[in-house]
Length: 75
Image (cartoon, rainbow, N blue to C red; front, side, top):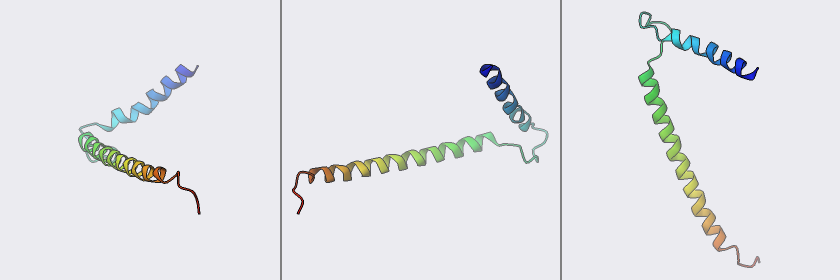
């Protein structure tokens, strides 16, 4: 039952996408320029990935400095 439901959902979700790229109606609000969409997505993914790496590396460095002083007695 789940396979049938999932197949129907994918089929129904895919129908608007197939009709949206009709080259005859470029003035439609649902016409997508797929190349620009892909480039924008890749740029966004690259920026988010770089920010994540920077954040992880900065946390790792500060974690190492906190750990070095962990053996000192508290006042």
